[in-house]
Length: 429
Image 1 (cartoon, rainbow, N blue to C red):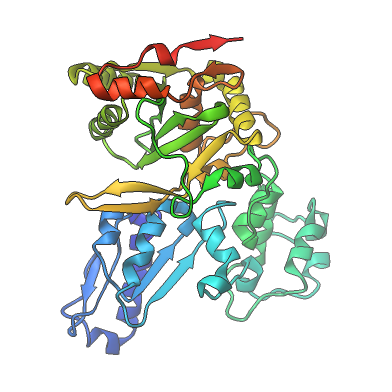
Image 2: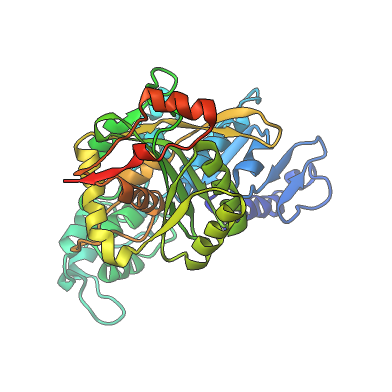
């Protein structure tokens, strides 16, 4: 399994190459190795898995290999881990460059011993071809440049830490030096070539503020949905990457509670809109704030809501005009402890069975960061924060909204089915 079907197939092809090298393996294969799945004569198999929760839940292997785990959604990785539970000899292998400073790979790495994992780490100098001891002082590149004259070469030499390659290495020292010369930032080089985790500099939110916002639904959950409370949905559209839909309830003392977080990967807007309409019905949502970039999606969503007879309005949020204020509102909520996020979210499968999955939103909040030397966030891994900022256009700090319905109005709502309108009046001071 990997972050994409293409990446998973690459790893699967490593297996096929081993089959061609070792005739004893071929003798145990039923026919020839196939494109995505090979079966042995004893019924065992080896296959690449499409990166979807539905696919991984249907498999029960002995071994799960997750390549480039940081490129795979955290929700999918958590869905995949139970695959080996039924095995007598389960084995999980996670391999990745540390592209995400926070996430399931980071948590597993940091807590490897407690979780029963063995950590193995290497960098580019562990797989470098042998080169002379005096290369840093006397080496000359193909373009005639003296190695010692390259900017910052002393820093790269320190990274080598006295290593001069390996007889079985396969990366030339010249290639490493060229990568060093072309690096966009030193932080980038350390992540891609040295296996380091990204720097925490430039994060939009403090990780400790995000951690403080989490609560365990299995231990204590005072933040369940209350019928008649103000509930708002935020949407960040993105078919080619991820569409994120977050659902928020106003609570006491300007606290906002995340009721649900759904992410869609290359799913058609019709299916997403169908799910959103169901959420609106379930929570009696009156307002949706959606990224204005999804102009056609927003139009279709409003049409679907009208067709379903739902009094819910879709407001478009223009990020180019409002992003600075939205970022300030996001930071203020987390810094002031006005956010509550469940560690798990409820799901129902096609057969009506209820189960809970790990809520991946807190990892995206922690990874949300600015571009280097800029006050603009990086347009990557930002869909859940963006959908949150859309929804929080309704919950600007300094704006007072009665978050929970009065008990008598709740009873009135439940008795005669009339919507509560007077209880959502907003006052600005």
